[in-house]
Image 1 (cartoon, rainbow, N blue to C red):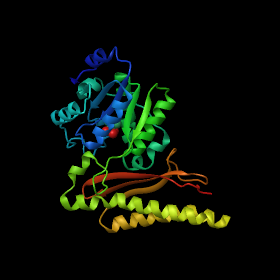
Image 2: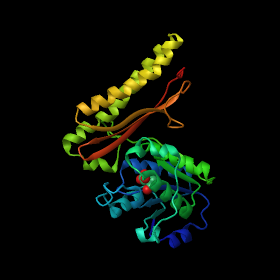
Image 3: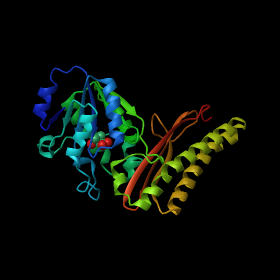
Image 4: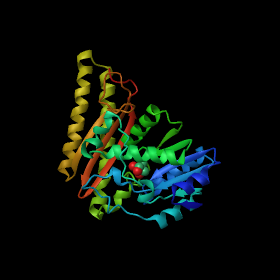
Length: 296
Ligand code: PAF
């Protein structure tokens, strides 16, 4: 495995590679990232992982300076996973000049996480496009845990005609269901136990939605319309439950999984998305589901 820290050296190393699968990361790797690497391995002859804590995607009061930087440990893990190249540029190398040309992501970037993290997805979109231009992969793998990020990256690739296949990889979870995240290590032991309640809440909502959708089949049109409203009451109940347990919920939203917009009649593939604070830690999670008979 080669560890490369400059754009020039990386371009030189990859110049004859025809099948590059790329996993962009901010380092501090855990089993979730390693799973992305395994997926990448299945899709490319040469697997490149970037490690770069991107200042552009952190707000002024966010954890950019305290974000864990563990390059040595990360490289050991990546080597064991059979990665070919680690690209770990310095901030100076990636942002040689102040970044004035930015990628303006689609409007959905201002909703959900974007409503609470102003400019976050603009920073993500910009660095991802820069990394794509530098690495020029055929395939790139992103985790579904960052569901909105994955959606926005897909939009960038589609709308800017980038010749890259984007693969969304399933979220890796701890035994109690908590989605793995580098930020989980900020949780104290009590919070860590409580943290699994977020995914349990989404699972409970999912079950209630299925029950509701099934019931819906047997009802008249007016009752079917009420169904959409009932889902918003499920969102509210989930918010109330988490807040009552000491969480500070930013949002819990049931959306169409392909557009991330609010549900409309006929939607079958849906996703429940959530972001909430537990103490000083912001956690996100989501649950995809298929309502077989759709909403009508
Ligand atoms: O998901 C992440 O780790 C980051 O947002 C990414 C895609 C590496 C861009 O900095």
